[in-house]
Length: 366
Figure (cartoon, rainbow, N blue to C red):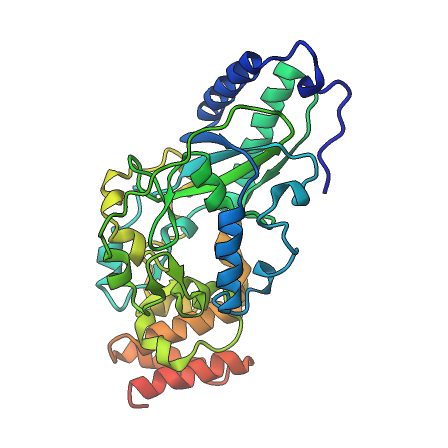
């Protein structure tokens, strides 16, 4: 990938001064807020410390089957190699906490209901954020003329949390998610790589202190130490990234979580400052915030594709959807409708589904 071509770049103009770029940076932040981003920060491309952390994490094989984390060489931690010409990165934050959704604790405390990570209840964030970033780039173009940029939203080998931390948007907490002191952690991140020599912001300080709530609450003990996540044990990895069988010794810990897990964020004291999103697209669709496991297990593939259209959930496919729900049904009370639903899938064409259904039935003595 290369930065877009340019005729007379402002960073090459003798008339451009540091004061000009400081004013432009302030304008970019204002435009970002107008476009629906709750925070905008700017940083350089130096990520040496984060590269070391990434390499150690990969060396411990904590990424499991996510081979894309090890791909692309050093491009993930060296933005100027991913996009030649990059001088600065504009990092943006968009809040997604769905205030209209059923309270998470109500769903988690009811083993008959399905819990899906709050970020996935509404529209897939990838396209929404990318379009907003493109609009931000267009406003910059209108102001300074053609310049080099590329927009990313979890769509390329980018260390988005490390970049956001350097840009002052928050700090990486002990659960490895980004936390903002005033807004918590329920937000998406996006990046605009640019060749503009903008002034950089001050990195955020860490405010986790002695708190270990996220380590203690993790159902599968995936946070093996502060700032150390073994993805192979993480419910988000097991229900979204993993394509094969879920290890049996971890199935009980999954409970009724069928797509992702929010426990480490739900327990985080900084999230008491979180506010509901103003983006209607992030509100729940198709009652995914309150449906029962039996109801969702009854979806055939056409139902699954129709009801997950435009959401992040669709990417796991119908087979993994049934696998996940079978595990949750195995963890639910031995009610008649649960047993019937599982028995109806005993002869499913997928061996993966059949194995998880058989396990679930064994949990009920069947």
